[in-house]
Length: 128
Image 1: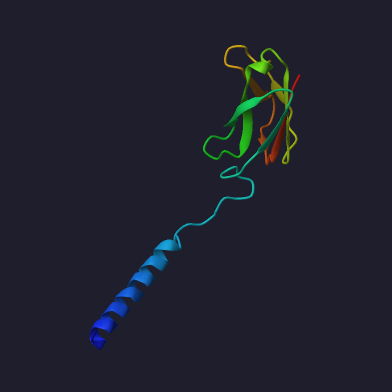
Image 2: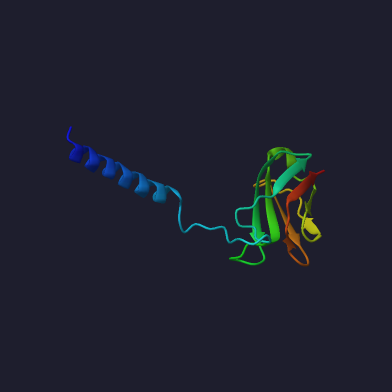
């Protein structure tokens, strides 16, 4: 192979490496979410007394999603008619009231009568 061909191939590989390197760095992506935002965060759920199938949160500040206003809890059939309590830890202390688990749909809705909870890190759910 001639030296000029080797040089062109080497320059081509360098160009590909540079293009690939800049494409893989994800330029323009930043993490601007503040510490109080729920975006990308998690709330760890623990349940006692029944089988929890899912939790769906609704927020008191649509769009920002930083304040939990209610939670719809879906259980297995073993919880039908039972009483539910939920307590969040982390953030501000807010009391929630939950409905009894419905036989149709196996759900309980927990809502706050006052301020929404912000900064929650975990939820303890008790079914009795």
